[in-house]
Image (cartoon, helix red, strand yellow):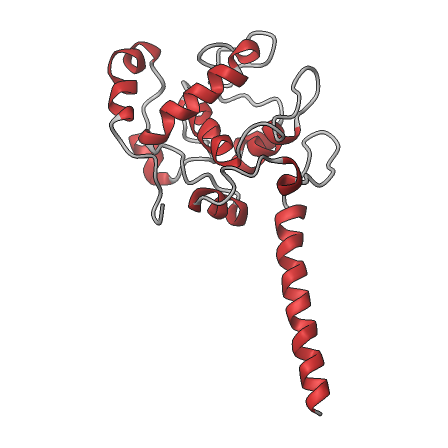
Length: 193
C-alpha cells in the first residue's frame, strides 16, 4: 500500500513536470514548418529569467506592450536587427511593413505568433533571430513593433480594451521630439519586475 501511494505520487510529479515542459516547448512553433521551437536550447542564457519572460512563456501575451519605459530598448533592437528590411519605422522595404494592420502571417496579430516568427524565422529573407537576441529583448522588440502601429487598433489582438482606448497611432516626429526622451525617464517594468 505504501509503495503504491509513493509510486502514484512519483508518477503524478513526473506527469506534471513533463506537462510543463510540453507547454513551454509545444506552444511555440516555427511559423513556416510548424516544428516545435527549442527556445531554451537556442536563446542566449542572459535575459531568460525576467518576470516578463516568465509571464510571456506561460501566457503568450507580451507584458511589455505599451510600457513606455521598454520602448527605447525595443527601438534599439529594432534598428539593429529589423530596420534594414522592414524600414526605419516599420514602413517596409525588402521585407513587409510592420506598422499597419496587414500581417503576412495572420498569426502575427498575436504576441505569441509574432514572437514565433521573429524567433524561428519565416519565408524569404526573414532568418531566425532566436540564437542571438535575448528573450527579454524579444519582448521589448515586439512592444516596439506594436507601438509603430499607424492604423486603427480596433482589431489589434495584442492590445487590451483599456489600451485600445488610450492608444495613439505612431507619429515619428512626435517620438523624435518628445516621446523617446519621456520614455527614457520611465522604468521598463511589469508588476513584480
